[in-house]
Image (cartoon, rainbow, N blue to C red):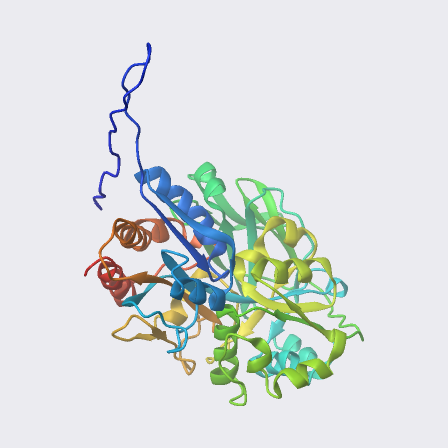
Length: 455
């Protein structure tokens, strides 16, 4: 069990009159800012850590993006930085610092297209390249249609889950099989333990498969399915999704691409996938307009069909509010109940093994298993995992930037990331839409966390 310092100090206060001496608990604080990719994870983790320890760790909301987080950390405005991308020599502080990888997650291809009536898009890397590179401009483009023909088009006709905080993703794994992943946010997971997640065949009026809810916030059901049946996904008897195969109706309307306008580690990782997973003409950068082939001039030429938004939340809100849009954000921003109720969904993406996979914690973990980590704690992905059929291929690892110098605040930063890696992420990351680091990757993260406050 992790042992924490006891940061409470009893202060004797001299008082006058009839007031007696008293003691006041004093806690240490540490603040961070930066990447918005881990925003939903850190919003929950900091509250839980503070309750467990009495310290006060905070992370700015919104965080400002990875580039801003690196700048604030360099300037000494924060005790730790948040980034999903590497720190260049120009961005590095003059003090000694290190990366601490602490959690990962899928970058969802988020869209809203009302004409699909709840159907899940299946997109290949080549088609994603065409959409975000501006060569595929209409929703009825043959490339999108051909991708959709490779899998039966299952549609979720239930926009609003009967159990708030529970959502489902349907991925076709074969001609007559599917993988259904249900995500339960921490509060729903706690309330639902011991109950069941069920796939129910409404046509045959029978249960297909049922799984008891235990400690994990993402529950996967792999099952044989019939294209002639429709199915309900239930959590504790409440419907969270209703799926059936339907004809694809791709409209002749413009695609509105929504990208991050701020310096973004999510953008950096998305562009990393684009360059190494589909088209080497892309550039890896925190700025989308510097990533895309043709650069800012090319993006400007697309006019109103390319829209920039600052931060993951604003990008996701724009997609959720506007049919015909597509963008990229950490999956938890897409499964948010309010956005999902408006028709926002995540596409299944074709991986290097030729399988269409949804943006889940398990898919992200499978992909990260093929990555490597260097001596300074930075992770490099392998986009050529041609035999890894369960990997979701657009993933980010997010990092804390910590100082190695000894101080009370740096001690809290070190303890916080150690606690996240050992305790919070294994228990809660998947429930929040993220993937905990495991095995050698987790060991490396813990080693990096120990280097904070070590000198």
